[in-house]
Amino acid sequence: MSRMRIDYAGVSLVELLVTIMIVGILTAIALPNFQTWIRNARIRTTAEAITNGLQLARSEAVRRNTNVQFVLNADTSWTVGCENVVDNGVVGVDDTVGDCPAAIQSRSKGEGSANVLITATTVVFNGFGRAANATVDVTDAGGGTGLRPLRVTVASGGGVKLCDPSVGAGDPRVC
Image (spheres, rainbow, N blue to C red):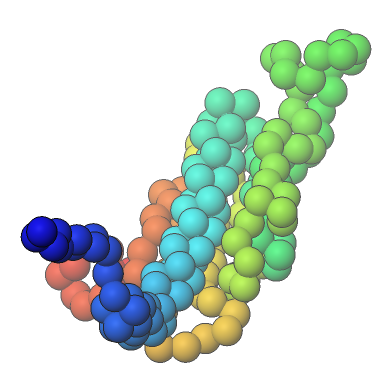
């Protein structure tokens, strides 16, 4: 009678432990870089939201031919609205010709990014889309290495630009 040999499929305990150790080491190496990437993404998201709000305020000022202000609070919330609120008297209609509400659009702090520091400011665009020079710096509240603070600038002509103060001359992202 011959004896049959049975082969078992699977992995041994030693192989499993070695695999877990390798995954743990790779995770420990990658985690700090991943956290820095997340923090930089929060900075960029906040800076882009501020840029979009400023561009909206400028376009609304030109469209309505009146002064429209962008009010940025320290908690990253902002509001775009008319500097001089006008109501033409039509009940229930806030977007007809002649109306200029105090809040055209707003962004609450709950929509913002956590742990991001900004400088609160108010920018007023006139009917030609021009505004006084303004700068908003967006950084991480915790600080640290590898973080890229961004800057949103408004030129006197009303142009809004998102730039990176840490890049060198010749780079299109330079401030």
